[in-house]
Length: 340
Image 1: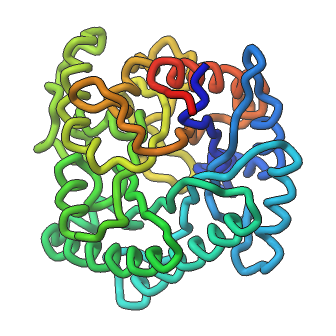
Image 2: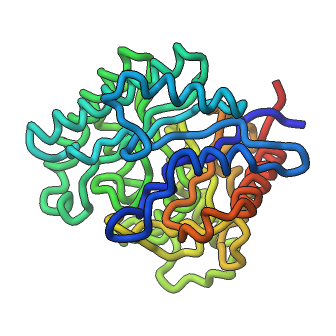
Image 3: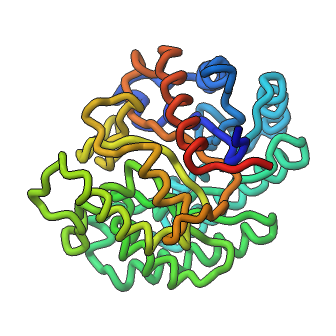
């Protein structure tokens, strides 16, 4: 049985798209308990990835990391990648906004270092995005991309002091990162060895459809959603370009539509693992990211994570939801994993 990559669940779906203008936030402890309780044929999640956002976390509390380490250790879980709460700033904003962005990356790296010292984090990256809308970016594409790259460089230099890599999230709602080609342009302009790409099977699938960047669509506008061969060819096109940059990976499902809730902009809709309308063959299509063009395993990261944001709380609070997710993750590891 393959034991790599390790299988992680994300805790930020309890926060993203929730809040006063949507449904209540699901507490961190609830997300942790449902993750720890999930089990399929004796296999359980190996760990969790964290969104370092309030009210789940307070990065200014010096005891926060120790409390978290105790909680995950008690449940035989590890911690992997961390999402830096950079949205109080912006990578293409004012000097103050950009400084805030870099400061939040620094706080996240400090927190990650504490978790390493406490023995509960052995792999993973710090995730970032531009914290800027596509419409704002489009007011000055060249100038704003240069600003984003400059901010990312400063953040990379901070992260390097802690031995961290930064992963830029491929999601259609972030300016300068909203298509596969703009994403590559931004990463190449950053020109730092410790930056890479975070692929999400749902979000990056929307790259093929040209949402927010029709000039870079791969699938035709009226493509047949039942045509799996066209979908596979489109996925191969974008993954051949993005895979060499990919240092963090989210398993997910998508039905070819966009969705937003709460204050979150519309982005690639996360569907449930068992959704009959999902256009992706999760286990097969994960291979476009986990194997190179010759079909060989890249082993580019030691864990993979399920991401399923903006589901109704009634869905997320059912234990069966997380068992179904774990079952999908196990199939990915059976198809594209390895043993150590």
